[in-house]
Image 1 (cartoon, rainbow, N blue to C red):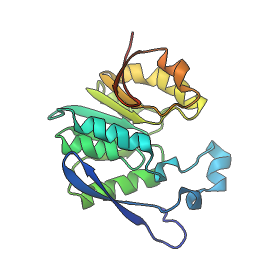
Image 2 (tube, helix red, strand yellow):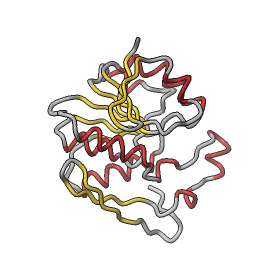
Image 3 (cartoon, rainbow, N blue to C red):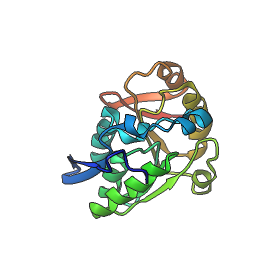
Image 4 (cartoon, rainbow, N blue to C red):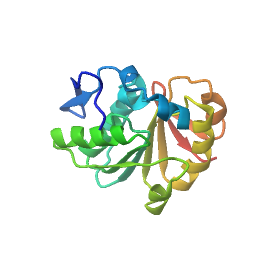
Length: 196
């Protein structure tokens, strides 16, 4: 895992599912920007921020009975929803396309005594996800920030099976994406999606 300049990670505490979690994260995502990675794949370190959508989704997940259910998180980043699902007894696979995100998520799960799997997966190469499908619950927080994400997810999500919980803060590509699903609000800006 690449550590930001200065080598320090900051620690934050969150109450999730009745448990106090401490997470390490980079103090600034901007310090992780790699111009070569951006030139190659327009890669930005979105994973390094704890976005409000991730917190909202984790809170919604913590209210669910997930004991024994198979749960997948896409674009997990710091993985707060995955950690909440695992605390609720789910068998969780948290995924992100950033290797650093996956490494830090594994470390944060271990430091909090939480058992889950975390793997690097790209949506344009989803074989690991499809091999293990159908999933009973698929989680995603703030995934629609680019048009290509919305297009890839429209093709991928129906192949993963199960219910989809999406936290969406109002990104420009969200309305057209949500129009393709049966949508039910389950919390503020957290939606259950089903194939129509």
